[in-house]
Length: 419
Image (cartoon, rainbow, N blue to C red; front, side, top):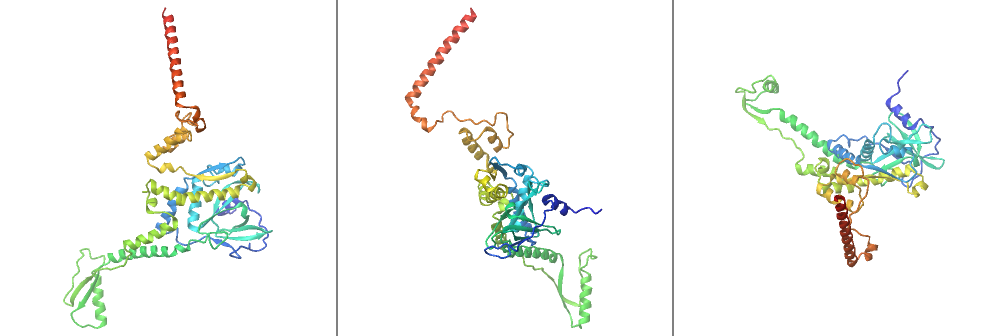
């Protein structure tokens, strides 16, 4: 019996062989009669620079933490906390979504079938070779085709669609073809450097013969001279006789992109992905990381939260406060002084508990750390009129008298015990 391939097994595990339904033709949109998404097979993930940028973006996105609100929490929302599907942990899930979104400008997230064809057990980001929108009984469905030949139809309402650069298409991102000129320049630079190394390793000479010779004798003289330049010449010395009037070495010259032009190429890649060299090289300081978080990671987190909320909950459940959001502890990248200032201010005012402060400093939680406390000198603004300076002085005097009376009682008790 032939063993099924991995693609077939994973396809069955995610979709459980759904029955293909009859379609009524392409779904009509405003801008295209046949809306279609095709995963790009270009070199955007093959170039070292762009892959490094994509990878670092995904690394920071993988640190996001899901926060599920509301009472309607089905099984697949619980799985989102640690393992959205049997093959990925939550950080791996977020990492792949970010990577697919950067490479293809579109990322599709489908529910993992719970086995009964009704319930969902988790989420899985799929990378079909082609996705087309169809009309099924007046509703929008997507047909997903995979490289192994598998295909399925699934309702648009059950799919999460993440997009970037969405303009021409009503449903999908417009693709990353705009980066092709930059990729071509990066490839040309790499080829030029390779050629320069190869040419620099070769020794070339130009010689002038001392007398006129026919083409055949000239060719034989050149071949005889070239034999001395081979690997068998261990001494590295080339000799020639009076047949040659003059022999000069040719200095290899090859064109490579200068530093200023290479910097412009790199900045074009950084602009496209919303990153910079400090982020990619892990040299970012607090201000640089905060700018990167707000400009890239937070945007990704907000869109992913809305997409998963829409595909998980019904409109009625969303109206009653059920939602999925993603957040990150940005203070983990801050300096110790900033961590201390923020933690002190929020802890003293009862906003944070002790365990939240411990989390900022990567310390373990402790018993009782879930309690919220507040500094004693703070007072409710609505009660300020009840706490004048005269009342405070009177209260202090009363407390002093009570303390004095208690002290005398204690002295009397000690004296009686001595007797």
